[in-house]
Image (cartoon, rainbow, N blue to C red; front, side, top):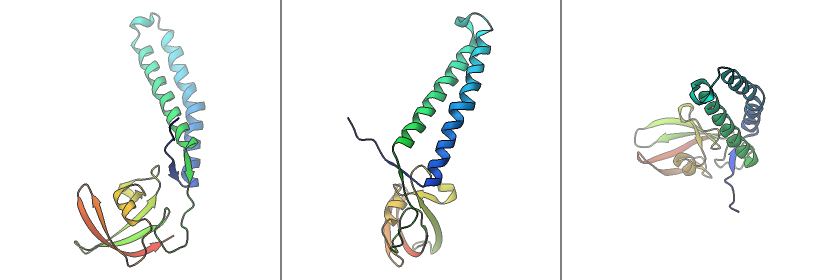
Length: 158
């Protein structure tokens, strides 16, 4: 038996996924069942596109439910900040790009919470990996698909 990947996330994200799963298993599943029931009432199933679409929707729904169950079953709840002064999940890190001389801030989160548009980067991303465990004042080189960047860590906030 292969070991499952652990999904690092905060307790807040874990609860959000639980709520989404509950919604899909109750409200959405009933809606899709109604769509199938209604489509069956149209007659011949072999030429019934509404029925085919409803069954496809049901398949997508069950796939999403299975995915969310897997995430919850393999969740690793990370407590924000370990107060050691080093970058960890839950920290907001302000860095200075040494090439561009520009500041940027990133919140380090688990993979289930990452959203680069909101400066929320996963601890598994190139930036997250490069910053994890580092302290204020450290200069780090981050290898990313767009090239290598050098950042100086200015602040770590918990």
